[in-house]
Image 1 (cartoon, one colour):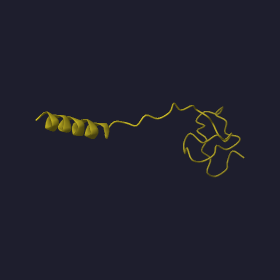
Image 2 (tube, rainbow, N blue to C red; image 1 turned 135 degrees about the horizontal axis):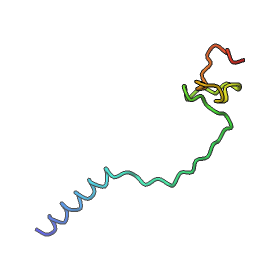
Image 3 (tube, rainbow, N blue to C red; image 1 turned 60 degrees about the vertical axis):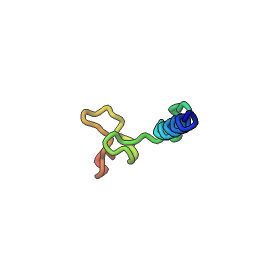
Image 4 (cartoon, one colour; image 1 turned 60 degrees about the horizontal axis):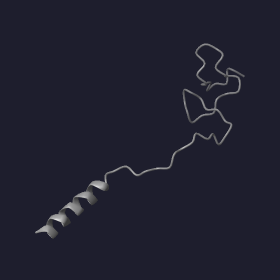
Length: 67
């Protein structure tokens, strides 16, 4: 009976450990590229002349009006 009980406990711990988050190494914020991205559309690069000094400037200029 004790071997059955210990087998059940081992199986319960194994099942519970499957749902635990994996430990990941500590991440440091390293910027690989000097490119700044737009705040409005994060996957587009920020236009050169839109540096955030103008009111309402979110780095979005699809028509190139800032040039």
